[in-house]
Image (cartoon, rainbow, N blue to C red; front, side):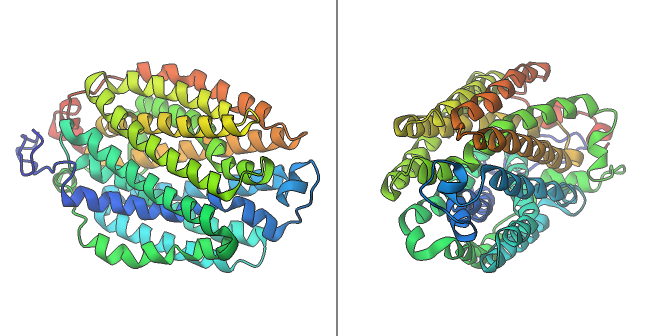
Length: 434
């Protein structure tokens, strides 16, 4: 049942009041994801400006000449920022004890505040450190938004709710990318990061509309409550969380460098004009919307596993195309890669939510983020180091993305959850509480 106020029977004898995917409570969670995307994605869009501000760009042929800082320095800096998201694990896990709503509001507020502060950084490495301090909070916000949206909906609405939160994050990221493309000369990197004050001002409005899910309220009163974070890797869940962790690692080996270097590559290596980059952002936004709709439909009609498998392979191939060396390849590869990633998001998000009981669901999302952070860090270091050796972006893409795509077969070691509620997979009160 998917209508607002529908009441499927819960294992502990209570009923769940669920929302449709377009209800206000779910939209509020998507707005939190939007604010998180706006705050986090500035480092990707403004990376070239950061490099020029703190480095020394010339007209030479190497990355350090064109960008101002070497690919290794940029890769290490981005890896540090990515690795900082490891700190989101305890923050996300605390939502299994204190609730999704309070942790969503707290992490979003703190993350955006620190992002605004990074605009005043005096040097490159101080900027990396300050921005990295805010990263765990915004990473936690995005993960908890997915959990909250999925928990508030039934199976027939879940992929739509997950897609909506993914779209929220994408809109936030797209907004900051579009602003940078059109106004970077006037704003500079400091102005770009200072703009995070706008979503920060909206947090009280968003927070009033975020609701706690009934699934968490019922789980909260269970007699047995596992320890946040560590409870999710208990013996009953260990094999399953290991599989999803490896998958998260592999996906992020692709998406980490594919998205983090793309604007620097477009602006500093291919010397693409700002209006073309803005058009690329708009095109990616449209393709992302199409991808979310297609991914939602496919996950609900064909299955979570098959949809995720095909989308991950396509993501790797299009990411390789992005860095093949021409502007046409950049535009087509990036736009199609965003579509592939958007197809993957609803299927993977719904699958992750449905595979685990409520009492450990947020903690599982935290471990997913951790695995993704490690994968992105590895991908960034490999990609940046190879690209630095003779400006070999195409080779870096092939050596980084294609091996990661081979992990896709692990999706088939997980059960298909299409049409099933989490309570179907963990039917007893004890199971849902341990």
